[in-house]
Image (tube, rainbow, N blue to C red):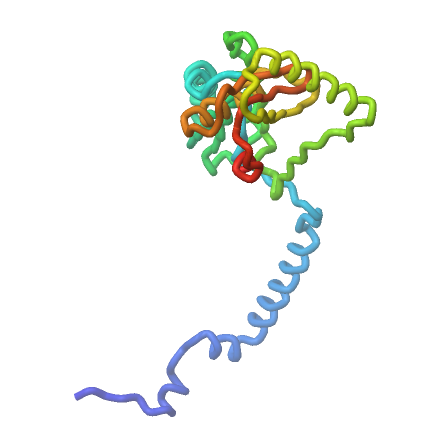
Length: 251
């Protein structure tokens, strides 16, 4: 037969934590005071910086090669950098993004290196410094070891406002280039020009590629006739017969 304990028997015989604390008050007081003191000590020793410093296991490598296609960036830039980074045994993952003009490589170290992350970044930096066979015009290789420590990253690109003298000079340059090109163009049809301006200090290689892509797109979609590329100091553009509908041209 099963024997069920009465409430009186349980009160007299069962042992549990509340019963132990009540019957051994001295031990309970000591444990409670010790816990309070431990909490006070932890609070005093706790870092109190507004932005606490943590070892980040994420970094990035950036290398530019202006005016070059994605395929060449991948073969001649990205793969070389990836091979150097992979030489570090603590690297857990390597991700890369190859774009026209730019290669971006993201590095992730093993989580076990969080307390010794500086040593691993120094090793990778030394390996990257040994890359001395990049093609002409490529580089430099920029190692962003504090990439993973940024909670929010804002990149702003701005240029000072152009003065009246610069605007007038640029307008004269565009007018001269258009006049020289339209002399060669047929007289029939309404001609429209589109101009892309940029700082004179910037190489025209990339804007020129954008202009040529636009011309190819317009030709494939039959959006214009007799399109002629134009360019000058600080601008590139296209002049052609795009029809009489301004709304269609803008679209």
